[in-house]
Image (cartoon, rainbow, N blue to C red):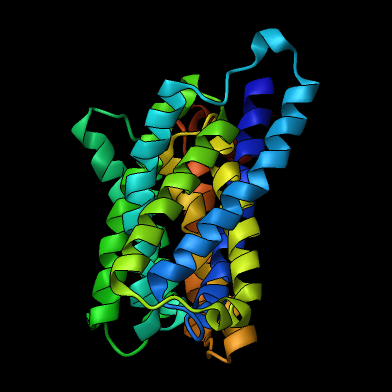
Length: 312
């Protein structure tokens, strides 16, 4: 019962993460009206890192000294660097590509990592249950109906966001591998720091940085920095301590649903009945990925047998 409760708690944290990330597509597009991609990412990941510092110190004060991991730990810093690289590549490609596509379509294409995650897991013999595959297929079909209306054409923006999905999948798998023996908040802090640093170096090299741009993009930076980066990525790391990376990817892929909703309410992007049908398929995929385990399948089978006896 405790194990089941912790799993559902982890799933809830992942769902909250997906909601925050979905609406962040709106803020990311609005931020591009004032700043270039690398400059925007450098700012928001710096804000995300800074937002964690008081939380880390408050957490340390409440915990016993014997159970604390030092902040300046070589293993944590090295792991943060390992996570910072795919985070930087995924965020950069997505941010550059989102300029030339809608928030909803960017959410759909990004969500394709729901399939890439279990495929990557096969490379190191990671077990993926049948329910996960069924849920993943339903989620991808749902994302298609949700975001693609006139045929799937690969523009430059679409292609860049698609490549970013590969790095998001690598990021999810790396978290599952690294988080087991490390402090989640410390790991989040260092991955944000390195992502911000890499983005700043790229911005200095290829972009023009202006104070007026930061003023115009202040609200998108604060939202994506505090909520999308500081809170959501940390929730992802905490939740993935209790769930399979493929299951996590399916729930996180729901960000595309909220990306379309955010685009509809804030950017006047149209959502059709076809899109609502896609949302339904994605929700079904998420539920099936959690319910179609061997144990739950036995319960469902026994329940159906009981119903059959009662009706006969």
